[in-house]
Amino acid sequence: MAELNHECGVAAIYHLSGRGRSPICTDDGPRQISRLLPRMLLDIQNRGQLAAGMSTFDPDRPGLIKTLRDVGTVTEVFRLNHRAKADSLMQSLAGRAAIGHVRYATCGQDDRNYAQPFERRHIHKRKWFSFCFNGQLANYTLLKQRLLADGDHHLTLDTDTEIILHEFGRILSATNGRLDWIEVLRQAAAGFDGAYSLALLTGEGEMIVARDPLGIKPMCYIHEGPLFAAASESVALLNLGFEADQIKSLPPGHAILIDPENGLRIEQFAAPQEPKHCFFEWIYFANVASTLDDRSVYLSRTNLGRELADAERRFGRVPLDDPDTIIVPVPDTSKAAADSMAYELSIPCREGLIRNRYAGRTFIEGGRARKAKAAAKYTPLREVLKGKRVILVEDSIVRSTTMNALLDRIRDVGGAKEIHVRVACPPIVAPCFYGIDMSTIDQLIAPKYFSLNGELSDDAQQRLADDLGADSLQYLPVDALARAIDLPQSKLCQACVTGKYPTPVGQHLYQIACDNRGSRIDSQRTYEQLAAAVGVS
Image (tube, rainbow, N blue to C red; front, side, top):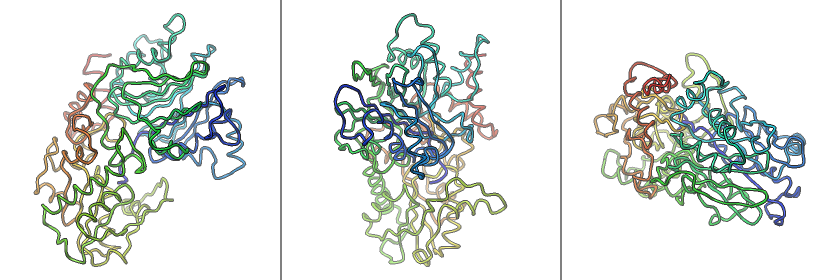
């Protein structure tokens, strides 16, 4: 499903001195443990391909913190396809601690100033810090207005990342004496409404890794001997060489502080709440090899496939014992669900669509742009599809533009005689205000056919199928998500399929979005209306 993008991913690594040498080190030793950071970022590249960057700490160089960030993939930014240039960069960035970031964004897309980490230089080492952030603060316009209210402050970028940076700076500047960094986080986060995981590195060599109080965004970590590492997904730690059972999920509302003198401690910085993990991590965003909050992404997707199979038997629209019936996944995130559905129904699962993994970002213009973009991403295999009744498995449908073009190509190029779309997700009927690029109801296809609470009906699903060019279409119901992920519905954020948000400002923004429906007001205006609605000037 190529219409939806996540905000970003975070990674961090630290090798403490005076505690031996971790076997994870490269031949360059603990003082250059930062060389492992690009490898970690590659493993979470699925979370953002627009920009990448890293900051490192070395107490023996004049520039205690050094940052490299730019627009491009991890390979492009760190020159990983050129050994000499990559080695030169890694030598210049060498440090015993590093944080890094991959970014997708909905604003400032080709501006390197939006690339992370963000660094704040200061003459006091504890106030010199760099940090990176995954998520979104739903109330960032309120925080922005508070920062600007006295007329003495100025923001250069329209992003909540800069606001968080200045919130940290404001608290540090307002404090006499030495304030513990977890206390800084506690004070700042008291005013946050939204979803986030973050990593921060100071000029004194402290590292902070934190996760929002609801656990909406994931954060995994490992601590073994002198080495600490953390990432948005477990696969980045697994591929460093750690065992799966060593990797833990950071509890919601907790932070890890690594101090070069005192080692590591984990502390709660926010009041305990029932978690609200983003269900989309398991069905679409996360790498299929990851495990988040003790739930395997792969197994969750195979469970969705079983849910699809059960629904197919009840639906009875497609002859399941006909040799012309095949199941085809939309690559790549739908494959586990499609394989599982096919196994349960004893139907062949065939790769009838080949994804072009090297298309990258494309800028295609002209009257045939929609089909051309689909062609750049997927090639239908006529040898597989011709004359077949295709059950096309997709993980979600958001705006429908890619699906519409894809169905045309499956018929025209692939020669399929029927196409029956099965979606391993309920209809996306509400915006996300926590870090996914769908912020208005009018961006979404499902609200045009279904009620805003996502209630399904056969007639509405068939109308959507007709408009997309499919013979039939079926979504999964909301309650299938909790069964597939094996978590209670009460512990999942399902706002985009139910319209029920886990934070007060998120719910307020949704009401504004509902009021704006049909007016074509963009998402930025929604946030601006929030500030006006609560009386902030």
